[in-house]
Image (tube, rainbow, N blue to C red; front, side, top):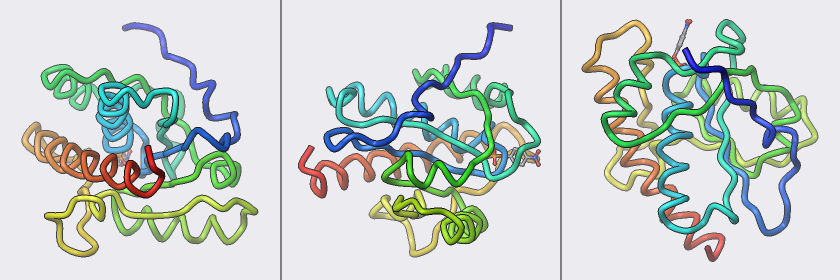
Length: 176
Ligand code: 4NP
């Protein structure tokens, strides 16, 4: 197995001309690393690497230090993504270090709202699929961890659609 990649970006505060986006799930080994990998590729392909920082984090600590789940990495490779994340648990500093904290499901959202109340940060909290114009209100990215390969495939489809919408939104709202 290759060695974990460090995450130096998580200690940097947002700069005025670099937007910082952090995806959030429960374990930080399936959904949010997938969103980080998919969105990073979109950002790089759009030539916006210097303008948008991408990160991910979990609300739980069980998988701290682990690379993304093998099933997610396999599907990522099949679709041309590289999942670089090493799992970590969210802290109140994430509300200061990022402009956007984007949860995968409503439980993530509730946890984020509770933590936001204890932080001084100003990060905006939202749900990933809210950026997909074809998703219904409050649509979630379901947790695939206890599922099969097909649940990971569906998860990637949802994440890809929403990440495209997210980039379009950021381009128009932030003038990128
Ligand atoms: P994730 O999936 O939140 O998408 O990373 C999970 C991974 C592990 C666990 C739950 C969800 N777990 O309970 O260990």
